[in-house]
Image (cartoon, rainbow, N blue to C red; front, side, top):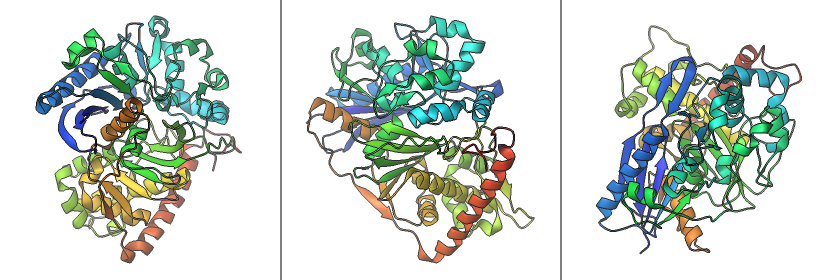
Length: 493
């Protein structure tokens, strides 16, 4: 029986799970990650600490197994900027995808057409925490870091390099914002638009699907596994979750209720519409003729955690709080845009802000929590519509631990949702990719899941609520974007 350890290097937690050939979890371990929250909306991570965390969880899982795994598969957070030298050592702390230092730059690029120009060649929008604005920001404020770097990569390939000595970048990670997903090559027009064409040599060439690496001496010592053990790196967490949650047919989608609210729909074509609002991206998958239309919003469980802290509650209280407030939250309404970097899907607005409306002395803390949960549901519906969902929908991520919230999401979306019974679908997805890489022709078995159906008696209420949300959002965007977009721009309302 071939056992593979899947490692998901998340923003807040690194998880490792050993799976058997049927997708059954045999052992697991997790470790909290450390984020440096700095002034000015800066968010950074220490690559050495991240690599150490990977070693810790893999060793724990291997010890629980009591035998050696047959391979290790890596997935994890995307975007951000992980600069390394030729040996894989960081030349500066990694900049997280949550970072907001380049917000003003993105606002300017929305105004002057830079983002629209790049979007026409890649189909990928931009937000402050992606390569385009971050490379430009460093070129202006910290050029010595770029001069010292040999690789401008991402989290997964950074860890893989430390374990194997090779730079291996999955095409999904390379997507935002320079990759033409149709050719899997970087678009020179996008690099030039962002003013970083001279730094193109820092970008690793995307690896061919099915690439298999192996642990070198130092990686083997770190993980406590044999030198030469196969390692597969990527895809990163968004497409890995789609694969692990059973997205198989064109039109099927997945909604990840995690730190980000990530919506993805499987498609067999890429439509680079230069007139479309420059948001989201087209993610390459291991299949050369399939892509994921992704709308990864910045809202998610972070917004829920914020309102829970505001009312003096924790995630353990979510079900009870939702039960204490009726659908519609007694008239309380919310915008869940709380990231300091604004929003990135299904629209790009660095100035987006959250709010709670309709408060009165009769408002209870449960109403505030339900309003935010409903608003996250409305944001998810907006993203899924933009991504073109037409088939089944899987729902995964930490938010699904609350079945009450999952039922609320089904109600707001007005469609059934499939919740995989395996919680770590990102790790399961990259393990499936690893199995196919090691044994061509492998097909993942159908996963086990439960279905939550929407309730008929709240359909009209949530249809009205969604229409009101979209109208209020359109009005808010005229204020947020009043000075960031010229008239006639796709994002100008």
